[in-house]
Image (cartoon, rainbow, N blue to C red):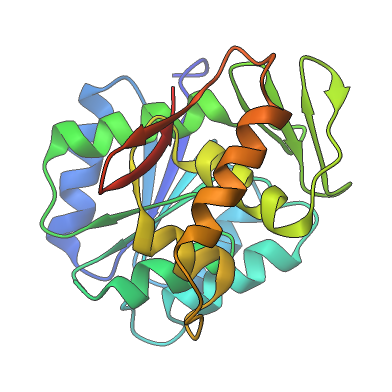
Length: 223
């Protein structure tokens, strides 16, 4: 047990916590479930997990409030968080990502998808707080992105766009989602703005092992 990565799951539904326990155990992880934010933070003070599964709709402190507290705490803010919710609205996903969540999965979900998302996020994150994919490194504390050890000079939007691509790699991100996340809910400018920023980023990371790939008419992803 000692060498198994520990995952915390916060959900007020007992059957979901039981599902997590079985699925994570079968996948080779140690896990602990919590019904509410108070019990969760009490456990966090004793032992930090490798990753957190966090439901949005909770009694008392909701998932957004828990996420805010995590990201405000220097000891916890680098632990990857996957938001989980039955809410199908795109705004729920965008809000969670804006608050610093690393990924989002909607209920009902398949166990194989859940484990794949967990594995992908654990591969991308190191516990010095630096987010990595291939030879791209993002240090959020320094607000710095490097490729192969060389620091890039990027605009704020280019930084946010590349950070979004790395967080979601290797999954495709819809054009509309990118625009909402990077430019905001109230952006009504030309969608060509996104294409121009992607073209600029491609030049900036031209020497990288990772490449920005276009899915025509759909969106972009890193591979």
